[in-house]
Image (tube, rainbow, N blue to C red):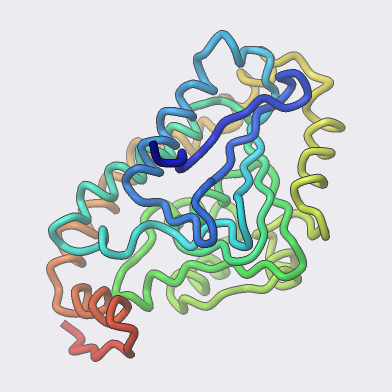
Length: 259
């Protein structure tokens, strides 16, 4: 039996939950990982076992948090299914009504940063690198296109989305993309949960979280499908979208034809 792509464990006697990406060193969010993420987020939301949980701490095994979704699944034949799975998984996290606190080491790129951008609080290691490199593959980041402007403002979001560049930890902190830098981000994130969330009623906290996410949930329901269609129906059929994926897989520079 293969090892699970993602695990969910109780911390501090169920006071909060730890959702851990378990496919180091890159923790790619492929189809299996996305299905596991969806199922575990749903369990965190509705299982009586977890009713006392006040937060979801998201961590990752190995040197990197997550380098994003599977690149081969961005190909034209697979992209619609991949986006459906990916966006379903992240919507399940939002709809868990649990505050999300992320602890990040190493690279946090693409879909990994989209996941992190949904968090109430993000703590990163001093050597962390964060970015949305999709444009370099002839692709784009639908959820980040909606969520990043909410988190860091329109201009800074467009900088990351359109340049594809990465930010180191100090730059990410200055931009508001992350909230704290710590040598042990997992411990720092857990301590923040204990100090700021655990003292509260779990049922009240979940309802307050749902209220705070009202606009985000509406945007994901009403705007995200249109951005998905833009990707699948207009971007994916282009020459350059296919070229970007091929160049990445062949480990060469892309040869854009601007069509």
